[in-house]
Length: 399
Ligand code: ACO
Image (cartoon, rainbow, N blue to C red):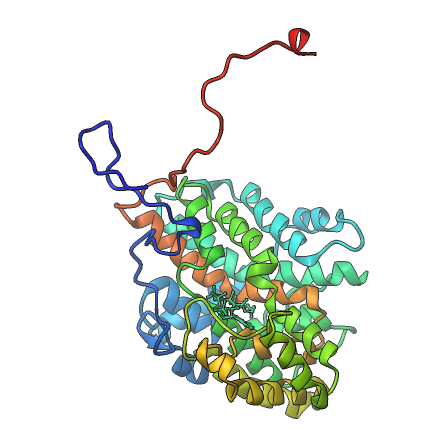
């Protein structure tokens, strides 16, 4: 639709843009992406450097505050997050009430939403100390809720946080601890998962972040806005591609079946899952980093036979005219499922892992939104395609 603003009654120029693919919904200083050059930066820092030299909690600080912390700021931040990892016992009771086979992402969505009722002061979003407190709580409690959702479906007792451990090792402990002994994970596995969290920490205005901003624009509390982000991520088009990659690799079954599979893709029978991206048209910088994490994890866990198929598939596709012409390269999901599987996560946990990693990004964007004087309540236009004015006929006369 095009309409030029003529007077106060007419809205000005409006466009029809399904999915808002060409509409900037906000100004943001959090994450920069150049899809053609394969650049991803958080607050100006290249993702490659953050993945190699930082850790997830420092990256969370950076995303939320805009700059890297001093030593004192970092220590205080880690202390605060660590201190808030426990959740109220009634949240635990609430989670225990779910069906025995509840999907962990559904449990996470509901329990994060429920947190708003435990912290009613979170509704006062104009107070900056208050906002900070809720941001800390959310980043701190996500691994606890995520791990308990996982234990629930397995019928295993919930494990409380062990705050002597690092953020990521503590999460692994709450997931996999099987005895009273102190939990210890191989540092290479902890590092790999931490890197995966960093890679997923923000990706500017993706579907779930847009959901957080859209819901947050009503000035609701950050728990409810984050629950909206989790709901968006729950959908298979957003958070589910790595699971599809694993299914695809299993279906291919062996390296000699790859050419036949590629022919099917080229004939439009199916998609090569984990390839292509709406924004990255040369390469996805996260995919390069993940490949390295994959090597590190398999060094500890032993090689997954699917890795050989994945590597060969990538090699063949990258040399094939079909994929070259369409600028199709491996995306972040091509290898992440293999790593998660090697770390013993079942596929239904993959999106929970994504949600934990994305939480600081959602909150950084939410925090930016609530301080942005230009922001308005999200309320897009529509093009109405239904009936126009009709006279209502009562049921007694219609039937
Ligand atoms: N395999 C085979 N062909 C593909 C693939 C693929 N994975 N992706 C795109 N194409 C083809 C399309 O069929 C189209 O071909 P055509 O020009 O002959 O019609 C062309 O490449 C352009 O594709 P579009 O669908 O227009 O690209 P778009 O940017 O809209 O889609 C998307 C991006 C959705 C990621 C797509 O590449 C895809 O479905 N990939 C597989 C699923 C996947 O890996 N998703 C994860 C994305 S990363 C993330 O969400 C964290």
